[in-house]
Image (cartoon, rainbow, N blue to C red):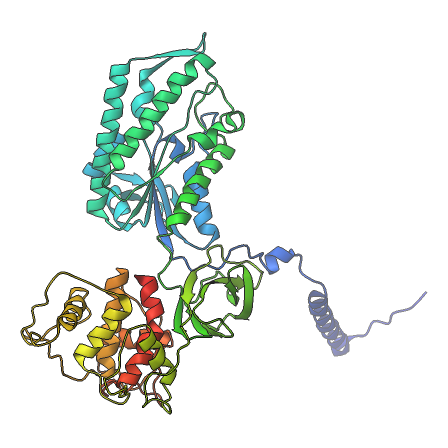
Length: 561
C-alpha cells in the first residue's frame, strides 16, 4: 500500500494551490477537447431559402372561412392564404402577411361595410406586432390582396335535406343574392382602387361545396356555382383584379379535398390546391418582380453585354448562371453583375435568362429573362468613317434607319449633335408616332417628317421646350442626351429606371437627381463610359457618339416598349 506523507504549514498550502490550479487547467482542456452537444443544424442551420429578385411584399387576405383556414372538423388551421404566404416566404418575397380580416361567415357586404367604416381588428399573420390594425391602412400598405367572399351571401338560400341528400333553392332569391354579390364586388374594387390603386388584387372563384349530394342534384348545384362565379366576375369588370378559378381543381378529387360529407370546408390538401391556383395566376402577372432585373446593355452583330441587378438571399448569393434558351452558357461569381456573350450569329433572336444560386445550392425560382436581336452586319456606306473607332456603331445605326448620312456620301462623325437630330434618332429607334402637334414656334421651316419626329419626341416626354421654342439647332451635351434617353425609357415602359447606385464619376455631383440617375443608368448598363473617372457631362455629343449610345440602348428601349 502506497503511503502519502502529509506536509505541514506553508508547504501543504502551496501543494493545495498547485493542485487546484492543475485541476482547473485540466478541466479547461477537457472542455476544449470534448465537443459541445449541439446538432449540426444548430451549428450550421440548413439554408432552404432561395435567392430572389422579388421585391418584398405586404400581403393582405380578406375573406371568409376559406381564407381563415377552417378545417373539415370546424377547427382553425391553415387556409389557402397561409400556403400562399409560405410560398412568398420561400422565395424571399414576403415582408408581412395579415389575415386578421378573414372570418367565418364573412360576406361581400361585410367587406364593403368594414372598408367604409375602417374597422380595426387584431392582426393574425406574419411580420406584425400583436396590435389592432385599421383595414384601410392595411389596404394602403399591401402590394398583394386576396379575397374570397360570396359563398356566404348565397349558402343560406340552399335548404339542405339531410335525410334525402337533396336541397331546394328559391330561384328568384338566389338571382337577387348573386346580383348583389356583383354589386358589392364592384364597390369593393372601387374602394380598394381609391385607397391603393397599385395593389394587385386576386379574387377566388368557388368550388362545388356539396359533391356528396345525389347525382340528380349536381346539375342544379353546378348551375348555381356557375352563376355565383359569373356574378363575382361581373363585379370585377372595369377593375384590374384577377379572377382565380378553383372548381375544376377541387372536383378532380373531392374525396381528398372535401373529406367530410357534412362540412363544406377543404382539407389541408384542398387548401394547398387552391393556393397553387392563386400562385400560378400570380406567376403569370409577376407584378412584384423589379423591372430590368436582366437587361441587354450593348448589342452588336456577334455579341451582347448582359447586365443584371443583384438578387437577394437570406445568407448570400454565391453565383449566377446565364442561359441561352435551356442551354447554360456560363456561371459567374456572386459579385459579378455584367457579362459579355460572344460568338453570336448576326441578325438572330436570342432568349437569355439568369438564375441566382446561394452557397447551399438553392436556386432562384423566378428567372428574369431578356430577348435580344443581334445587329445586322453591313458594308460601310460612308467614305469618312473607315478609321473611326465607332465605325461599327455608325453602320448599325444607319442600317436600322436610325441615323443617316449626307448627300456627299459622308457621315460627319465628329460633327456636334443638335437637338433636332437627337430627337429624331431616338424617335426612329423606337418607331414612335403621334397625331398631336408640339407647341414649338421655331420648327415651322423644317420638313414634315422632321416636325413629326419632334412632335413624337414631345408627346413621349423625351424633349421639353423653352418659352414655346424647341431650339432645334442647339448642340446636345452628354448629360442632356442621357436625360433624353432615360425619359424615352420611362415614357415608353411606363415606369422609371432606378439605377442601382450612383455612377462613379467625379464631375456629376452638381447635377440634379434626375440627371445623375440618367447618367448612372447609362453607366450601369454599359451604354456609355467615362474617361479617367469623369463623365464630362457638359461636353457636346458627336454624331458618332450618339450612334453608339442609341445602338447600345435601342434593345433595352424596345423591350420596355
